[in-house]
Length: 330
Image (cartoon, rainbow, N blue to C red):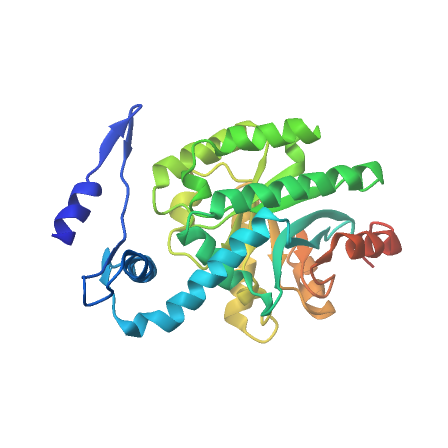
């Protein structure tokens, strides 16, 4: 029966000339085996439903083995909702430096969560949770609004920097995204060319046609687009020629050991040459030493990012770092 329901729900349909499809995750419980009242059954159906989401299995039947881990996850999701609604999340900023002029030209905006009981929780842990539980749009718009608000403050203080914000897979399926972004740009009176959106190849793959439509719309608004983690996906070259991107970020996994690993150096060199031949800028992230910085300058990389320059820091610390450096890295 569950498979029949899944097949019916996932059948494609047409809306406004777009072919759409949705997926479902079902949590199954049986009375009285899994509970003798509605409250218990609903709670355990919820647990098995999130198991189905996490395993991408379509449906899951409740068992007591699911309880411990999933209840912790459900609690953390609730805490994340609360943190989002009450501004308990934080933004950190990591500078990007032009390797020719050594001027700070941009910051990447990074989301941080200090949980009251568990301490700092890694984005690698809570971002997938937000994606799976319908929080990603609200989370992205919160990050974007706070980042634009900070950009406005910095601009009044003489810091005119590009702001780089990450987009997720679900963001690139949201046809409302360009209009939502434009509203925030208008609200804070910030030029759209101040904004950079970072995307990954994998974020495009669930529905490439819709993702491309959204990316072209954002590009037409004069927002810059950057491919993050370039080289780690399997479709880079196939999609690169059709994507309205302005820059490529070389994944730090290739940069960190490029002086010791000839294969990593060759990959970095090849990406830089490829990007320049396509008229794109290159950002190298993961620079942790002067030796790597010097090597990337020889390879004519455009922009640098990494702990050698600065770790991600709160806005106040970044402002102090920037003014101390007088806007340039030396």
